[in-house]
Length: 119
Image 1 (cartoon, rainbow, N blue to C red):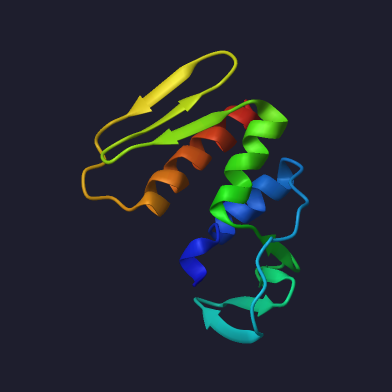
Image 2: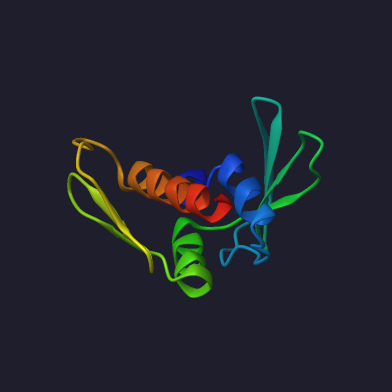
C-alpha cells in the first residue's frame, strides 16, 4: 500500500513549497519502521514522522500531480516508456524509461516540478 504515497523526500519538499493537504486515503492503523523513519497509517491518511521534522502528511501521487497543476499550472503526462512535463514557460520530455513503473515516472516528474519551483 505504501507505494501509493509519495516518498518522504517528496513530502518534505512539497511541504516547503506550501503543500498542506492531508492524504485523501483512509485505512486502518498500523505502524512500522523504514530505515529509522516511522510511517503511520490512520483513518485520515498516512504520515511520516522522525528525522527531526515532526509529522509530515504523505499525500497520494495523484494528489501531488493535481496540486502542481492547480498551483503552478504544471501538467504531467506519462506513457509506456516516457513522461513529459508542460509548464507555462517550457516543456520537458524524458523517454529513456523502459521498464520503469508508473510510480518511478511520477517520482521523476514530481522531482523535476520541485526543482523548477525552487528556481
